[in-house]
Length: 375
Image (cartoon, rainbow, N blue to C red; front, side, top):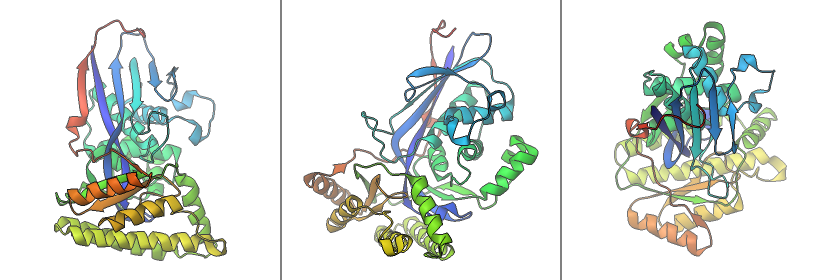
């Protein structure tokens, strides 16, 4: 029988983090060549969907959310939320075996900050749709995946979902999540899929060939939800004007997009410096009298300063508090110099590049022998 695989890459923010939570605000991201892969196999079994994930170490039977005892959104696994959306979209699922694997973390399970739940959802829906002979455009795959992600986090920007769908460099504008969730609640998934989503834009972004990315890991994981919540608290307390921040953040992203579209590597690097300066201002203001909030940790700052000293532009990627530094180099020689300098300083330069933007290349059909252990 045929098995269907879909590879959903992880993400890193280039610019637009924090601002992208505001509907309509843009962000630029890259898809890294580490990914979640879902393999979906139709099986000769009377009924039932069985899911195996490397993270679980066991198989679990899928049951639609309506058949379960009430549980909080956070307690339901992303794979199951993805299947819930598919059930609502196309009806009861046939007998399937699903296996999900990931290279987003290192061999010891340490998280780099490339995302996880969004990629799991995209990979699961992408592979299952093929197994069910459902053809989805990239935008439709994004929308179904975003609905599943919002079931687990109503404030998610879904920028990671866009990146997992498109690959490569991505320009993303967030949508009005509340309006979309209300539409789904009133009219269902199919109507939500067919509708225009206010503010949404997602498109591949071509960048100058000379522009190279270098990724370094701080050695510490970050908690995006915690830092975003603390920034929200600071805005509520009047320590920051988040609307003003979001407008300035959006302007930086627009300038960055213009620079790369016109082939101006140097201008793009200068804009990245402005993005970093704004994040540092946010860090200081949000922390108030107690000092910086911790968006840029000492490790992230040290990695950034080393990269800048060797001719690159660099900044923390994402919410901060740990995870990665992304450096943009004007050529391969500078990129090599940054990697070597980080390693000499005892820092971790990751052997990670940009995932190509070819969606079809990440979808595979394989043939497997009949008579699996689950049949």
